[in-house]
Length: 292
Image 1: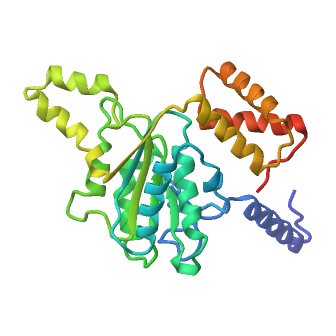
Image 2: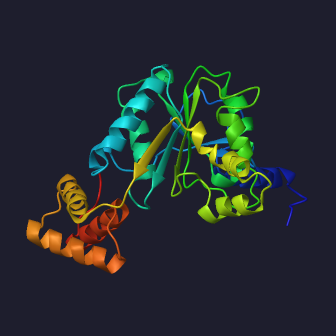
Image 3: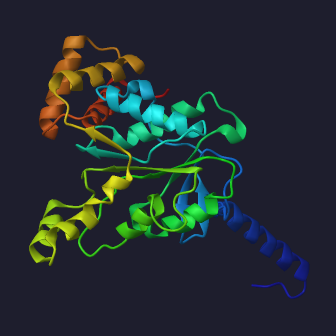
C-alpha cells in the first residue's frame, strides 16, 4: 500500500518497478533502416525491425551435397554485396536439404571479409507478413547499406492474394524493388502454389491458360531457380562424416555409418536435416558439446 507519510518511498519504489520492467521488455524495434547490425526480423505489427544478435545456422563448409547450389547462390550474394547486378533467388525442392541453411551460411560467408556499413544485412520476413513487403522496401530504400530479404518456406494457398504484393515488390509496380534490396525465398514448391490450385484455375477459368499464367508468373520474378533434391546414401553419409569430423566426434567410421543408416531408416528418409539430427543425438551419446 502507498505510504502516505513518506511519498518519497513510494516514488522510489515505482521507479524501481519501472526500471525492472524496462529490463525485462524486449528491445524496441528500429522504425527506420538500421545503421548497424547484421540481422533483423521484420515485425510490422511491432512497428519495425527487431535486431537478432546471433543467427542460427551452420558454416558454409559443412553443407555437403549441394555444391552447385552453394556456388551459384554465394556468387550471386557476393555480387549484390559488392553493388553489382544480382538476381532474386528461389531455392525450391526437397525438405530438409539445407535451403534455408544455405541462405544464412552465404550471408555469413560474405560478411567474413567486410566491416562496418559494407556488411550485408539479413532481414527475415515471415510468410504471413508478405503483404507488408512494399512497406519494408520503402523503409530500406533511402539507406546506403545493402539488404538481403529472406522468407523461409514461402507458398500460397487458395484465395490467398498476398502473392500479388510480392509480384509488385519484386519487379512490377511503379516503385519496383530498390537497388539496395534483394529477395531470397525457400519453398517446397517450384511455382509457390499447390498443383491442385493451378489445375482448378484451368478447369474453372474462361481462359485457363491466362488464369494459370497469372499464378505461375510469380516464380518468374526470381532470376535464379535453385533446385534441391533428396540425397542418396553416399551423399547422406558424406554429410554425416563432415559433421563428425568438424565436431571431432570420436567414433569408428564403420560404426558411424551403421548408426547413421539406422537413424535414417527410423526417420523414413535421408536428408541434411536428418543428418544433423543424428549428429546431435550422437554428440549427446558421446558426451560431446557441439560448438564452432
